[in-house]
Image (cartoon, rainbow, N blue to C red; front, side, top):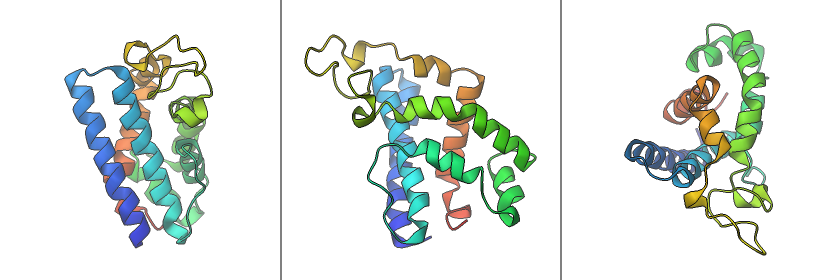
Length: 169
């Protein structure tokens, strides 16, 4: 792990800890989702810093990160699958394909990606706000509480907690 990865990993851990704390306290969905989205974005950026060059400036990262892990080199496949609690790499790849729409929805909670739609931070639409995030029922939250969504949250947790084990892969 290089020094840049270390910095992004530390922030991802902090954001994930805030997510866990807020989720456990029943805080509004927007705050819980905001910290989950940020933790996922930052662990993706930590991973992409492995080259020593900055990744693109974007709030999207989770989908790209998962897709990249699904195409990892053959010598690391079984280790990565096992690290993320999958028995076989093909199972991990199938899971990634199935989960990408949820990852996309989570990425799009960032205001830059939400356009004039639901985001975890600001009332929308911008020109004539009709919704406050604190009072909004986010569809992605219901999805995250389902089977595949819970799996995604588990994989994000593993990605953050066990980052040093795959940071250079």
